[in-house]
Amino acid sequence: MGTRCRFRRPSPVQEPPLIDLGLDLVERDGWAVLVVSGEVDVATAPRLRERLIELVNRGHHRIVVDLVGVEFLDSTGLGVLVGALKRVRTHDGELALVCAEPRILKVFEITGLTKVFSIFGSVDEAVGAG
Amino acid sequence: MAETVALEIPARPDFLALARLIVAATAAADPLLPEDRIDDLRLAVSEACTNAIEAHQRVGSEQSNIRIECRLSPEQVEVEVRDHGAGFDPDVLVDHPPATDPARLDHERGLGIPLMRVLTDEVEFRSTTDGTTVRLVLRVSAVRRGR
Image (cartoon, rainbow over all chains, first blue to last red; front, side, top):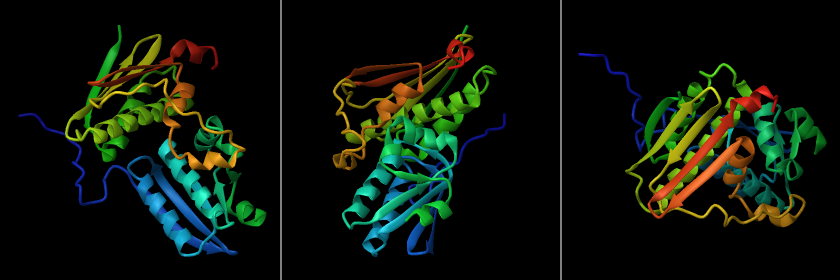
C-alpha cells in the first residue's frame, strides 16, 4: 500500500491553514499604523476590510497601512484599500500606504492606483509626511 | 510536446492559495521564465480563480470544483481555469473613472480582468451558460526578447 500525501482540508469553523494574514495595530504620532503581513486575497481581504472599518468607526481617521510584510496582494485587496480611503476621506481623514516591494508596487502601478494613494517607502516617511 | 499539471479545487476562497502555489511551482520548472514573470502568472491565475469562485457562489454551486490546467511547452506556459458558473461577457466591463476623479473611490471591484490582460501575453475568455474557461498564456519567446 502506497503512502498518501494530502493537504489538510480547511475547516469552515477554523482559520484556513494555508493562508495567513497578520494585522497588528501600532499608534504613532496621531496615526493608527496597521501592519499587514501575509497574503491578501479574496480569502483574507474580508478580515482586512473589517479591521479598517473598525478603526474608522473607533475614530481613527489618519491611518497608515504598512504593506511591507505582504507577500501577495490581488485586486480584492486593492478594492479593500480603495474602500478604506473613501471611508477616511468622508471624515476628512488620510490614508497612507507603506510599500517597498517591487512585486506589490507593480500591482498599484498597472492599475493606476499609484495616482490615488500616497505610497511611502517606510512608516517614518508616511507619518512624517502627514 | 507539452507537459501538463492539472488540479481541481473546491470553489472556496481558502483553496486559492493552494492553486497559486501549485501553478507558480509548475511554471518555475521552466528555467527560462524569470521570477517576476512567474509572479505575474501567479497573480493572473489568482484573479481568474477568484472570478471562478465568485461565479460558483453566485449560482450556489460552491460544492463543485474548479479545474486548473497548467501546460508547459518550449514556447509558452499556458494555464486554463474552468468554472461551472453562469458565464459572463468579458466585453461588458465598466470602465473606472480616471484616478484623479474622486468618483474613482466608488469602485472597489473590476480590476481582476484588466490585471490579467496586462500581466500575461494572451488572455482568452470562453464563456457559456454552463461556465467560463479563462486561458492565460506567457510566451517564453517574449521572455527571451526581454519583455
